[in-house]
Length: 295
Image (cartoon, rainbow, N blue to C red):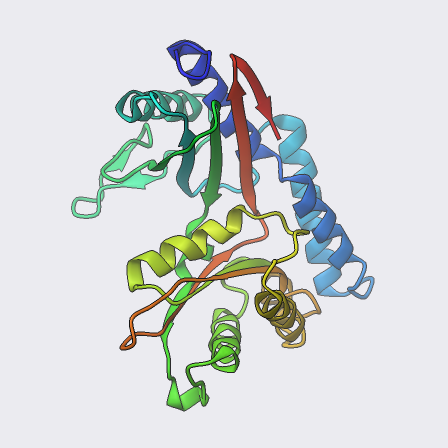
């Protein structure tokens, strides 16, 4: 038993988490997309593109089918109480991924990097991605993020200073490289998007923590006023670039940015940026005393 549920119960709950994540955008994401839709001029390509996106969202939810054909890298963040066996949970997660793929909630999306062989059950070396953290609570919490290849491809990591951008080792330098990343993406990451930003750390941890920022709600407020200002500035400035939805032009290039910091060693100053497309697929499930709750 894990948090009051048996193996089969946990597997079934994880399959349902995958179904909900792949077919239904979170309420805060839908709300934000609708808000930005009102800022575009009726009849313009940007407005029509956002209308098409929302139609796709509605159809996917109604049919319980993937919002995007690229169901992406399947990443689980699992927080568990003392005594839960990570090895057992890992096997149950894999069983759930296989079952969800068979039900067409996930597309067979994993490829052997050397041979090109497609893993039809979505189980491969390093996939699904599973992060564990033991905590002091007595319940299990699982957050699932599905991140497509298009948005993953346009993420970036910068080393400050960047003389060509006149970006020094300060918050203004951070702003310049983040905006440079958006300019270079030019809608190729399936804009409009959301950025996860990590300032500091080493290369590996910077990318990992940048991705974790994508677990945050769009309407939360960063408790650090410097980072809160950065988040607002990035969205405002990006939306002045004219890139727009899918790169077709318009006022909606980003609809969110979430930032955090990591301490670093003096020789390194990394800014890591993870880009999430409009198909912002994340969901959380909790299990307490055998009761399963989905957000």
